[in-house]
Length: 90
Image 1 (cartoon, rainbow, N blue to C red):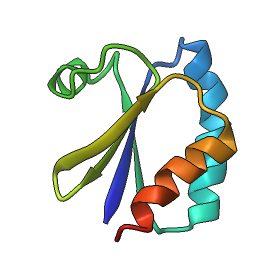
Image 2 (tube, one colour):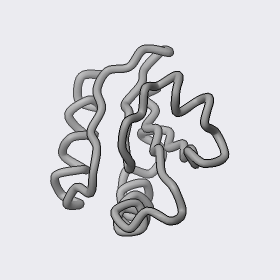
Image 3 (cartoon, rainbow, N blue to C red):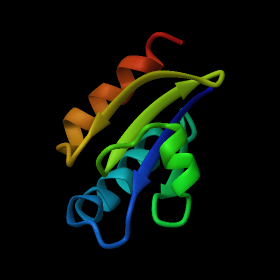
């Protein structure tokens, strides 16, 4: 299964903008992809392991391998299209 990791911080305005987008996309994809959130302030080691340089950063993973990543606020339809592109490869 494909996993999307959202690296974010509570104080980050673009992260706050993406919160509702993530919730909507997660609902719409309904179990097709696993969503995980990582607060970079609480999980610094994990953010460093993934070499997160800015937030929000979204990482698409499969079988422990990174397939792609995007950073910054992304419009909902573009974000959903990006994710679905990896689901279609399944």
